[in-house]
Image (tube, rainbow, N blue to C red; front, side, top):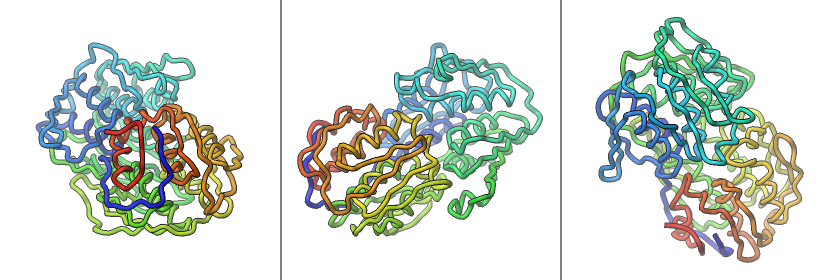
Length: 449
């Protein structure tokens, strides 16, 4: 991908359906009885992996006028997989599916691509094993392949899982396994993580109670968030609307902050356990106005976002803000590079085990842009360049879609044409990203559809 510097951007755009919500909607609809309709689902490669995985377990999917029609098999209808299930690049697919398989008593082995195969899986295997399921991780250093050995269990006693990391994937894995139990499942987190699973389960009629931390995560410091699930007798199919993906919208919002005349991103999810990015950019001095607020079928809040540019100042991202802004930290660092003052990220060691080591590769991108970065075990820190242009650069995105899109936004502010190797990874979450940038006035060569 090659991108030319942009003097200004303008326009009104939409983004793909939320990747996280789409994963969960595909899984839960497959476990329901009867037909579900998923409106506005994400179309990236990760979501395709989840759809293929649930198909291998017996669910049926069809496309109709842009919607996904799901004929579920019910809580007792999943079948053993006849071959290993390839989760592609999707950690969400692998980790959430492990909980579904364990709870359902289904035998299957999960594999993935080279990138996913170095990401940690004991974080779901160990708590599932503690709950009495047979889950084996056979990859070196606790990585894929992961095998769940099925077999029906009585599971009539309530269980309580206390997590040592705030992770929506681990929490969701445990909650999904609890759908099949004969007693309540409680999950305790050290800090708030995304609550998409809880909202979706409630939309399907499941009694899933959360402490108020999840509606006001910024006020939850020092207290313990808890989720309790009461297993349902069954799930009934229904209509689910998927919001626009805030993590995808973040790149367009950042582009609007840096180069926008008038940029709007419509129908974006504004779930409070996901929207720390919006709070942080406003703390940095940008203005993002939420209009037309509403709640979709499925329980997710959305709004149309209008972006105004302005002088930026450095901030510190740490503590409880990290789990609910984890995917947006690379693009926040690009904004930090355009700010005045010190920009600091700490408590974010989780970034080292994403699709790439995002601390290392974000630091590498910043250095290529001309920023003097100090990398730490759990983050990084640097002095912003203020209004100065970035240096033109050539970077390798390390097959990481968020590094590639962060580099693309940075390129709009460079002093020459920039080149990004490995930009095809953007298809993992946002296949039409390059075309969206073009619609705002950017000059992008090499990828897009």
